Length: 107
Image 1: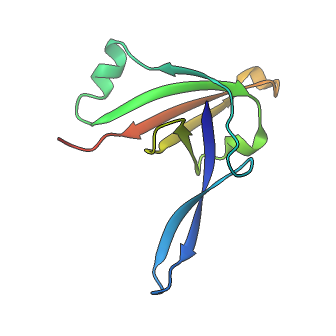
Image 2: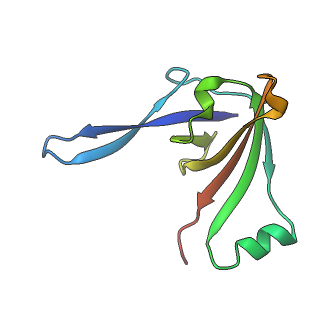
């Protein structure tokens, strides 16, 4: 299960911009999906010089989730996943496939 959050930029009490997240479906709402970790020689070749993880999510279509400015949070994980690509499968407005990337802190 995932939460799809939209970045909301606010100004703090010192006048500096801060970034917060707001759930696009409402507070505490999770979306059921199929989560697949990307793996294989192609992924390792493209990730050779970058510390990152990739995954693909398949879920019911929602126009609100196609915004690539949104981020995805896997249930139980506080690190955001960036949406690289949102694909309306076969243009039928039935399934949505999200390509995700998560940057891993350097060791």
